[in-house]
Length: 109
View 1 (cartoon, rainbow, N blue to C red):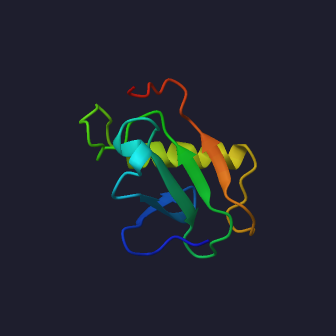
View 2 (spheres, one colour):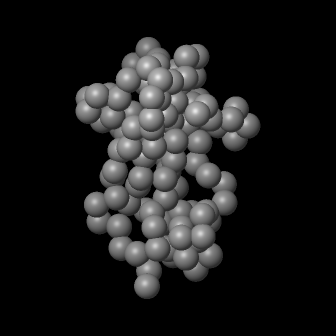
């Protein structure tokens, strides 16, 4: 499934251009601080398998004002490089490639 162009940001890693998008509104679980923030990445010109990155931060729009932090382009570039090393093939179709970077996330209970 391709990312919508609206709200997606472009990033170049190596010589390849990607699009990434962070969900504007948190999910219910993210809003309450129970689950970490996640974002999606895809190849900009030939979208195939989507990369779904789960961070170790709370969603910046959580409802309880839990300290979260922004997802920076440098974070996205590092996640893309890590996923490529782990076998993500962005132009090949298939199910989403999950990259879990949520170690250290402390849910609010």
